[in-house]
Length: 185
Ligand code: GRF
Image (cartoon, rainbow, N blue to C red):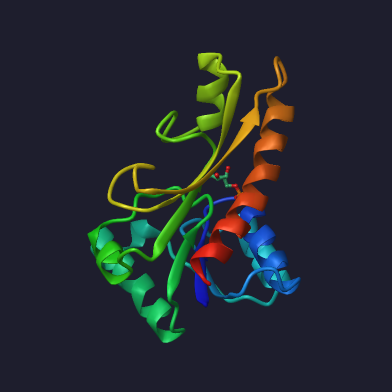
């Protein structure tokens, strides 16, 4: 399965997916990394794995539709079949959703529908929940609202945000790979 990974940040999920592919645990190939942040660390990671990067600044386009149309051209050139969002900090709009209907997935660091949007881990800690987790879901026009594919629970480490984050990211890397493998079968 030919995939594109969209990321705006560190890209640890990108790396987990790429390693799963290299180890033969995931039947896919990352054809392209798409980022909206020309300085994102995911670019460094992608280059190390010899994966091409499309870095476009949305502000340089007249509209979101134009921006997404430019992305779609690059995806079509490489015959990308699935879009995997991994820390991509933008809502996907109608243009991309239409081009990749039911073929866009996202990972979110909470048990949706709890704590959608930014800083889900901080939201969970602030609320005082004892169990949070990770969700893989299909993407629709909403913010973290599409149909749920897979979830895993992670315990909050009382008074230790860093340890909680580490546990969640570790679970993300496992769950995303597992969920993608199911989808690509
Ligand atoms: C992850 O926590 C993911 O769930 C969220 O953004 C973060 C991305 O981390 N959507 P990374 O860039 O993959 O390290």
